[in-house]
Length: 178
Image (cartoon, rainbow, N blue to C red):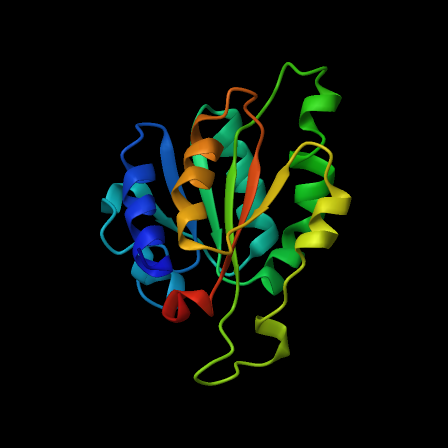
């Protein structure tokens, strides 16, 4: 199994769940390498968002509180940094603030961008997995380094009995390497 094929297959499987909704930049049309993994999900499951990462995370949290399971797609970890305040101070703290009455399940899909065949610049290839792990108490951070890790990680994020949110980190270089 190839990394790209496994991600694409998994996204199509996740899209079959009645409560999932994909949102983010280039989820409804081409623009980043991640779109190719979403191009075959039903169009009614994809909500294209403006380039406003903080708003996207706030909208994601709202969808989760309304009963959806949002899959919030950020093509680069560097740009997810713009939503970090919302991740750390809102999504990660809602269970504690609400005495566990509100436990929004969110799947955050993000990647470290590919640096070949052309290096896109240092603001596109960062990996901040350890930093995110240190900031969160509720949100789990999972790096996807091998193709065989992809489906089980997304399945767990979608079906986890504790309802925790999950940040899944893909690596753009692996789309063509593994």
